Amino acid sequence: MLLLLAGCAQIRPGPPSRPGEPPAVSNAPRYDAVAGQDPATIAALRAAPAPKEPVIGAGTTLFADEQSLNGKSFARIGDAYVPAIVGNVREWIADQGRRVGADRILIYAPGSDGVTHASYYVRYRLPFGATFRSVSAEEREMLGSGGVQIGDVVAGTPASEANLLKGDFIVKFDGRAFADRAAFEKLLREHLGARVTLTISRNGAVLQRLVRLGSIARPAGDLKQ
Image (cartoon, rainbow, N blue to C red; front, side):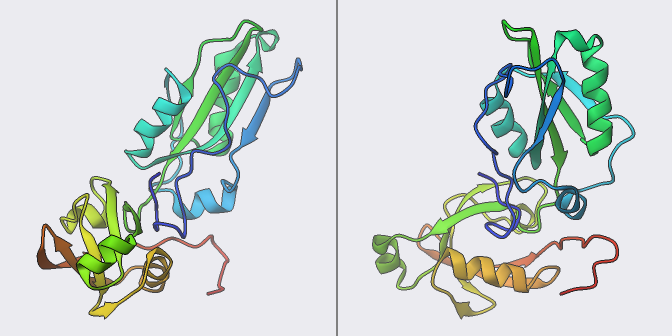
């Protein structure tokens, strides 16, 4: 799972679904937003303004497609189920994409019931751009401290530009030790848009990495926080 803020905002796979499986027997087309992907969240996290026309392509399998697009910082924001009775199924799907501001749409072959499934994606800005987990008890003993271990790193993000690599252990944040993933997430949230120094352990060597964290735009008119 790719994390925008590694826990404070996430690119999530969303609820389980299977391509071509309609949510209920109905002759009406239906769009279901992924939990947590409301318009305000999408507007705050998207990497660029919504395109005039989304890019539409053919999907293979939902899981594989989503994993691939997650790796390119795209988040699935919703799914449509369109019965053949609608007529111009592709145009309905495209029009829905324009309404929700999708960057990409993947369309899957209709099921035996004639219902076409489409998934909608938006490319998000990644303030950090890597997954991470708390160190284990054995790793804590080896490192002599708490911390997190880096998992997947997304190209073109602050984590990637700072040359953080999969397997690195982060043990200090601006010279301060921290306990675990939750503490690291809190530090990231508190330093959005700032330059921070991460102390990492890589193959036994201790290194310093300067990271310029990204920021999350607030919706227009939101003056809180």
